[in-house]
Amino acid sequence: MGLPGSSGSLSRRAGIEPVIGVLPAGGQFYTNARITSVTPAHAVVSFDGGIVQLALSNLPASCQKKYGYDPDKAAKYLAEEKQKLQERRAALMARQAAYNQGVALLAGTNRPVQIVSILDEVSNGGIPRCAVSDVPDTFSSKIFPTR
Figure 1 (cartoon, rainbow, N blue to C red):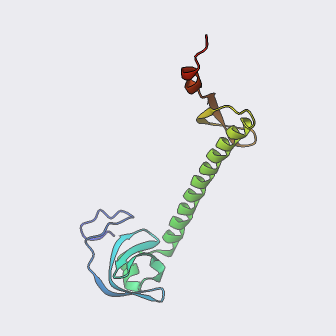
Figure 2: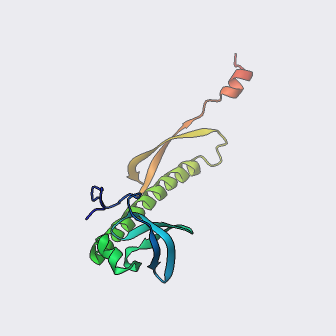
Figure 3: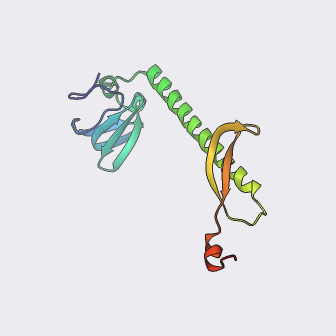
């Protein structure tokens, strides 16, 4: 169910859709609208006032049919996208926790260190470990060489 000249992928690109004089959607009206890309749940629309992402469920039935809108597929797509976002957030939070753990271990030592890597191995109640190393004190060793 792709657009003319498209491969029929889930996210479709623009430039091939005609301008819609007035596109009603969700109680709003978009003038000189062009649908530039479509997912199972949304359409990106450029219009005189800018660019907006609209739920396909808010578009007229003719547009829903044209772009193959299916409420069940849209719900599944949105659930998958939500899950991906939660996984990305969890990974980011784990990396931040590992960084904070490395910083906390060095608190009060008053020495420069570098966090070399955050390890994938999980320990200490689900917080990834990080590897740190001392930063060579090149500044003082060059200015004040030892005998």
